[in-house]
Image (cartoon, rainbow, N blue to C red; front, side):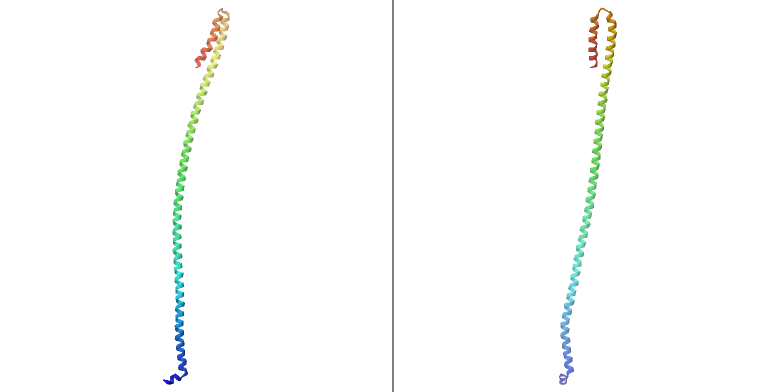
Length: 167
């Protein structure tokens, strides 16, 4: 065995084994550290991806909720606008009917006024013609008679009588 200690190959082998053990330990720790770092980096990326996925899912859910609310709000607005349009149409129709009725009443009053006015004009014309005719008739007949006072009284009283008759 002492020969082994004097043999150079033995010491090269021992140095090589020690070198391998030292490098193996260092290399193992470096390899473990590198693998751990890599593993941690992968875990971090997975966590970040999961967080991003969770945030994206939350944003999608929020967007879908907002879309549902928007659709509901739009439907409500459309429904309210339809109701408002129907109410306005009913009000306009009611106002048009009121205006038509008012114009009918106004036209009826105008026709009544025109009828009364026409009747009055006809009565006035008839009265004027009758008076004129009576004047001519009596003036021709009574001029020859001696009772001129009777004729003048008659001429004064007939217009008054016809005037009172119109009222």
